[in-house]
Image (cartoon, rainbow, N blue to C red; front, side, top):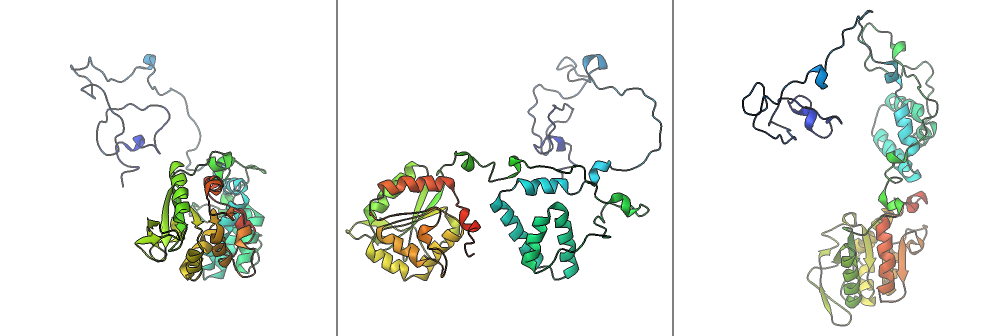
Length: 357
């Protein structure tokens, strides 16, 4: 309630000016400045009369004496009537994947609107931003883009005695171009070759009969790279490996979700993979991770779980972007490639290839 009305509203970062502001306020809600000295007022005997108001000769503010003529009106500048240029700049700046996400979001929201004419007006507004955007959204709604001829586009901020025609959109610039700063994909360190596996969460799918030695080696390499890993199995407790080794299980498929992890690794081990293939939750875990464009890796028999998770009639998951497989149980070589894939974070090519979702 005080963000715009408190005595220190100008101090919080979003409101703070580039030029320093000095006043007599101290303490209170949202105070950011750490003042030096004992007093914040004048006159005083404790700090040689400082702080005090600056004279004009000292750089202080002074109102200029000037004659002003003309009618007094309450009007915004005509530049405020350019309603669509910023939205068009934003749309132009998005990557293909980001544009697809925007289209899907608009389709989702408008599909919940039960009044046709509201959908139609929204499509008209979208067409002012970009016709291809409006066309793609309309296709998902099973509609055509209505004509904007004779339609009043702006109903807001118009006085009761004003002419609405004076408040319709005015195009300030024919070509607004694009800006990489407006795109998460274009401006991301990942797309600038600066991605990292640090803090990424990796799910290791395995159960009894898995290659525990290989799992341990992979977990060590992930940890060295700053990533975190967790073993997900068909049961809690201890996982008994194919060679008698044991390792602690962190989660079951019922107690966690693929949405909580950034990447997935399917461990080798024939007995383990047979059980995982028979577990619908394990198959769905891989399925979802692939749909969400996350890096996936599998060793030896683990590849069979990826094949089991393939969509009917869809491209085999094993051949998909960001999917790494190795016929060997050793993970030394695979781990390096997997870490590089994790650093890339997502493989959006899968969405552009019309992966079922």
